[in-house]
Length: 94
View 1 (cartoon, helix red, strand yellow):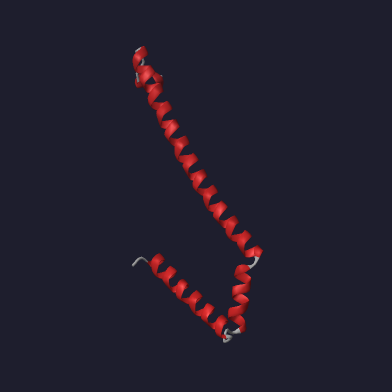
View 2 (cartoon, helix red, strand yellow; view 1 turned 45 degrees about the horizontal axis):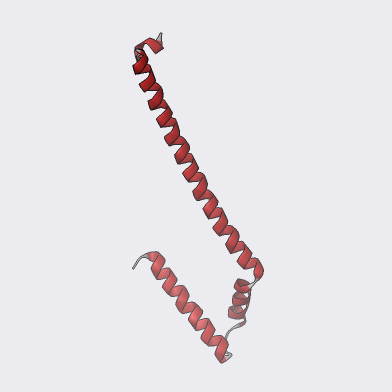
């Protein structure tokens, strides 16, 4: 089991236990407060914002990779055109 899967399993068990305690009326004030905090619209918005930031970072990373690939393709094309025109790299140094 991966660490992430194990963490998800433990979270699920904790939520199940909190639900049981709430149903039985034995939940501590800390459990009730935490559940209310997680259920708030502010918490949902924060989670949505974190997800959007994650997607933005992924998009920026992909954009950088794409730009780097384009630079490589342009350099290859320029070198190919130099070869077609009879130029070589030694002439460029002078």
